[in-house]
Length: 557
DNA sequence: CTAGGGCTAGGC
DNA sequence: GCCTAGCCCTAG
Image 1 (spheres, rainbow, N blue to C red):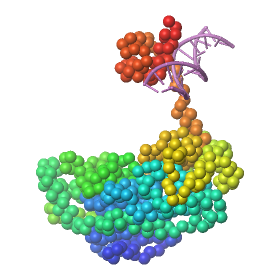
Image 2 (image 1 turned 120 degrees about the vertical axis):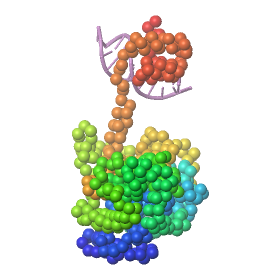
Image 3 (image 1 turned 90 degrees about the vertical axis):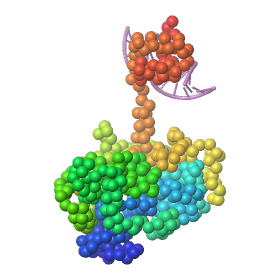
Image 4 (image 1 turned 180 degrees about the horizontal axis):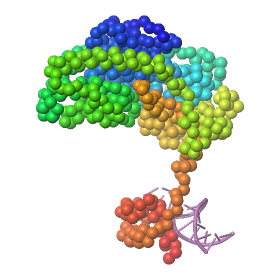
């Protein structure tokens, strides 16, 4: 372990030094910093966010240093997304989520500009897609083919038919053709394997900076203003500390508690869940209300900070950290400041220590649990035994995919890709010529409906699924998906399970009587109406069941 | 959504 | 093996 050169934030303020292990950044040491002000924290955090290969927990630790009422600008939100994106690329952890994150950025961009994608954005998008594919190629041929199929065949055709079609540039077409050549010719793979990652990151940075017009990543707000803000909040809500029943100066205590309670579990909720987990209500708040500050977003109708609820609901208790409330406001402000500094230093250093204790788990290594099905059978065996069959429907499974490609030139996916390839490079292929979504029936003869949204999961696009990582004890982590092996045959099997025949259930006398009465009332053929009018009686019956039953009843008569 | 043919489990 | 009720599939 050795101290790396101190980072150089843009404003050149004193900051921290990285702790490195074997050339990799594993933590951040802030112990040598004598005084912390908000600008120091901001510049350090911005610097961290700009690093492509910083472990997630270091970023989390940096967030710990900020009071929860600290304003989060749209640019910061984008930077958080960008950091995750860059992390995926730099750590060569290509996933579906990587591009989904970029789409979140795209949404933020549209929200702001309400116009067509900028050239910078198109370039960045193309670069990200290219880097993802190149990263997969460096991994192995299977991953490359899988990645190519998902990004350049499925996603590409989806984008073409989506409102985001303007995102597709000539450059994107050209790059796709290059990768397609690499699919066909192993020799070309070497040429695209080592695409310049830094250039990609630069393009993404350029795009982000253009979008936000170099709006400061962090509003220049001093800690004094935050304290004043908390006092103003107390006055505005009309709730004095006494009225809250906790003694004078509670608002300050609450503010302090918020900060002091900023621990692993809490930050996982606020940062990880709110920003990075799609579908989370809090994340929606962040995306839908870009102008609101973090504090506002967690504030309930009663004016109280909702983050308190989150803290009180968290699994880890922090009651001992609360001060007794006998100090003056002035003392408390000092306490906050000192706690702020102490927390900043201890948490960041702690993160560094934890990094050394627990090296990052290889995200590409599927664990045995994940490979085991519910029936206890080892899915790895199943994959091996079904790989040959699976190769007919997907280019991702089987042994050496290149060999498979050469031996099975009639693979439907590749045939379709040839068709796509044969279309004009300049002209976006017209989806109406194909009648169906490329990504579904036309590509792989799979039965699934076209996706209405790019964010929606494509059922046919995966032979590996990404799941949330289990939280590791004593360690901060941002959302990092893990691979879960899925054999193509298993997917088919799942479909069969979904359509498994229902267990036969005899009709009761009540059901028969109700049906008779209903047919008299609504007429034969109004099965939907009859079912809707007697949902309690016909529980678990379908309109078809009613029709069939009536057929039987009348057949006997 | 409905109608009608086909399939299947279960009883005899 | 046959019959039937219940369930499934799919054309229109």
